[in-house]
Image (cartoon, rainbow, N blue to C red; front, side, top):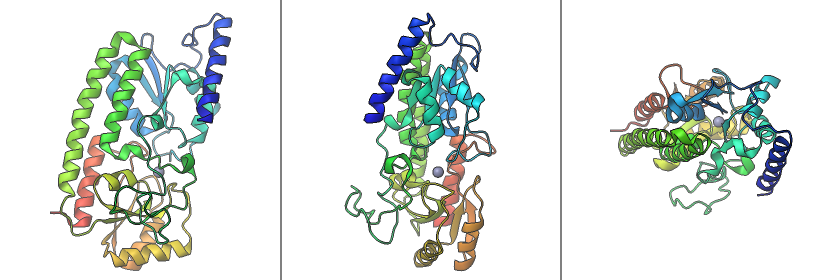
Length: 327
Ligand SMILES: [Zn+2]
């Protein structure tokens, strides 16, 4: 709340300055990535790029601040990228996830930014995951989620940022993004709305495939390298056992490794998941210790090597079905 208020003040100040200087906010072409007549959108990381491209279509030019192969959590911006954010017609980002982007957005002024974190309530980092000391028990509305995790909840004021891994929430974010783009570019507002609707249809289909595909499984616990899948496990009634916390670079303690190995054994986890952008070493260590296999479960923090969000999510679903013995 405090942050929002101060941003609004900043925005007002920036607008006043621009007005005083006789400038319109979008007239600056020094770092503008858009072509003439197109809305220049800067997306903070891959799933937001995917949304902006699908909904914006040929009316927008989208650039991504997180380059392929980079981990978005520890993203740093070079001065050129800060300029890109400052000059963007619209920045699509998730506050609390990438502090460097939050800072650059403050320079941009809130009226050129679309904060995904403000669209759908984010889950508490402490709610719903698997843990051992039962902290936060009873805080979660899902009675099945009797355990709580995560002590590494330093990001986003204790909020779990990985909201894009629930397709229904991504659809909601898409609808709001279409509205926002329509305000920035009223001539194409109907197109944005229509594309968001089409994407919602696809995401709803994906959601149904997940619900059906994960309904009847021999196991429901997934051991993942970092705790990125809380929205997905909440939605499809799985349980996440994150080896490290919400951020991939949080090094798990030997004690945590032992706990995870113990849980993996207890739940007869045949597969330990690792991800594309993070070293598989820790997952491999645990897998070796408990005699499990490893497999890639992509948290979509970067663009998939092939295809897009939808195809990578379908690959994830197949991987989960195999690992959990779903019929
Ligand atoms: Zn993450």
